[in-house]
Image (cartoon, rainbow, N blue to C red; front, side, top):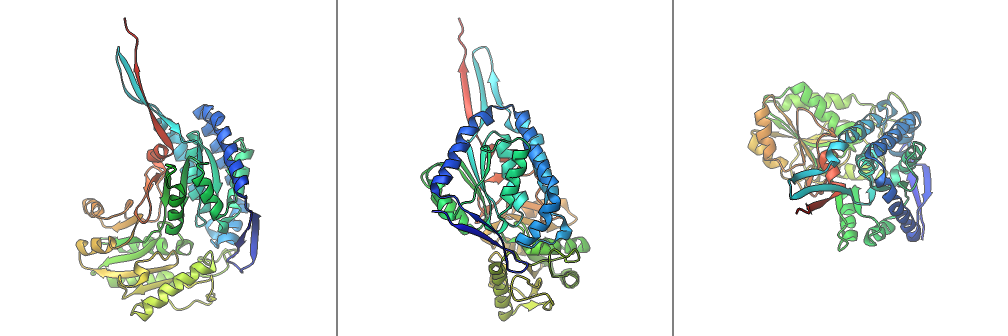
Length: 460
């Protein structure tokens, strides 16, 4: 049975878009079409698949003047930041560039008697379940390499960014990618789970909540369908005693507040060496006090509403609980704060790990800052989390950053930067952040399966 998906604009609470979902029969039919189309798509030369995918990427870029205000209306990001096409194109371009090498046969050896090698074959039908916070960039992380590797793709996008999948499919189809090779599908949770349980797809990539990830793995249980996940995060920053203070403050606070704090690898907690702590907090507060909270369609707005009222409610609850437990809130309520989706960005001090704001994912414009006296203390606090996506280390000493990084339970270690996804590196996590890896050569390895050839030659 179909149902209606409704995107509520965080700007004013109005209905921005609605779409009817496929019922299970419609979903199975879409997956079946994808499976039939995959054989011919995989048979096309790699260069042709790359050309068509990159033409689709360019076609998305051509829509950018429409996409930017549409994103503001759907999820609240200010138009002044210009959308996501830069990162969208960077990631797809890198994966196109490395495809030949990443997908090449692995030659094991050949002599007069044997020829041995390993091929990488596409899984078949890939289901991509994408999130709303960076809806184009997170989707392309898997869509581009999956298609390039010879898979077909079903893209199920988040309700909050309901039109993104439609736009991507429209662009890719106009560029020449066959309609059954890349399909945008509107699915409810139950239908998605049933499709996976039916083994209608061959690989699942999910980005979203921990609960959503559990649902994906539960649906796939016993099917042996690979499921990769990027789930929650509570990413730390650590400012050492020899850090460039101004650079650390500017980058970490931007990493905590950009996109209203709704970034997969956003900074959610900061540990500062005691020698720099007071100066760091003073500079951080000044930066946030300078933000302009308001309508994301206004070019002067620097921070917009959170994407949905329920997300803002969770952040407010974490802040209120922390303050009641002794934390200090440094930012006065801004004029545009309506008690709903428009939320004052907040810096908290006097926080502890007994507070949810330092343990649970906030995914909003709040960051707690704690004073530390040593690397050992900072490492212990950074590892005191159920999540592990990225960690940002600030120091002038490369060796020290590497030594500290070795001891942090995380997927990526940054030094003197934060909140950036380098497509040449594997995007991965540990603990409740999930499993698997996207982008880089490893991304291709995850989107394909190995097939070994051990060929004995006939000799006389």
